[in-house]
Image (cartoon, helix red, strand yellow):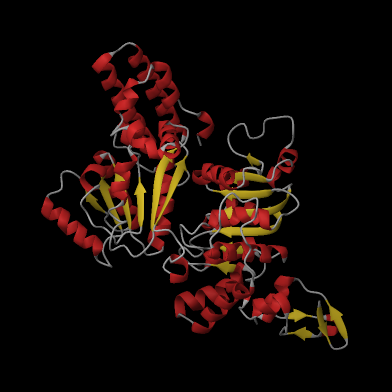
Length: 543
């Protein structure tokens, strides 16, 4: 309630905040123009920039199957606090600090009427399903994706209402806004929220039409290229807070980007700080609370092109192995497994036809490459360095020039054909603070004997079935002299042989040496029926 001498009036929270922060005025009753706001309580905390320090941490909810770290408990408390006030929040923690876990815990700590809608890139749709199952198996989850998404007797609204969480992708929000926009969601979550940075796209316009009482964005890069990215994000979370797009460019974007206006910079920071929580892994209060090595399996959906090629290889392999035996059969199986892994990497890797890795926006050929680019965008934007391991030299040969064009810097590329003197020069260059941020290595040539502690991220592009070999490669970064946590990303193509083996390693890691052996030889001893079960394509995981 807004009060003044001689009368009273009402204003929205956004109106009060904009007036209190000095970026707008309010017209009150009797023609009085309000140019300032004096407030106590939550509004006072917001205006005083004291919000982050006054929010009460939320202990790990009893129903949460895990343990939140202290900074994560503070994050959950902050998300729940802003949610209860009806204010949008952007959790912008550094990669690896557990944004997904904090969001899932918030579902329990701050229950709402109606389902929670999670909008994310298709590349992490499977990860969301698995993380929800891992932390909160009691919650019912609906995945709105695929050609059969509108099948069944119930309407979309009826199906959504029967679930706690609905998962979908950004592209489908634009396509299915008639269905999604008709549901009154209790909460909407935008993962990898930099996806809405362009307010003019159909995707961003559709996202803004979603109805929800609580709105949360998850992103490690709230500002990717320009300040208008921040306006687009805030427009989705707290419409009206930063004014119109035109006024924002005039008031903030132009003066800050063009003139380096310190006053405008300070005001924009003051306005947005209460709604953006960002913690860095370089912060000692955070990093001291993290384990030394954080490993995550990244599940990547196959594209339709990949799925078609994969199935063709499966059919050919099963037919050939049925008619062979002994050494000949083992050779056929190993060759077939290698082809399947190449398909999982990229169609161009398997076809060897010199075709483009990425023919253009909206036409991704490989789920893995899409996820690699998403990871590298965030890693490089944070100023970190990364090691990329592959067992295929030909895949590295394709990727290096592609990444060089995309990121404007030539990745280092160490494989078996590199001489010792060149190898030493690469290691020295990577260790320099201003050296190349990307170091591509073949698993055999770069998996042992190197000290590469300049890297705080490791990406395994394709899986080697003996986890000890992967661990040795990871230890190029995670070794004596490493002062930061190392984040390990293991890429697995969903619904394929890679996922089967990953499940086996995860469930029986202590027995992996004996079960899996030193490579893939054990697969060659499977019967045709067993082999079919291991390599069969699960089409539900195809994008």
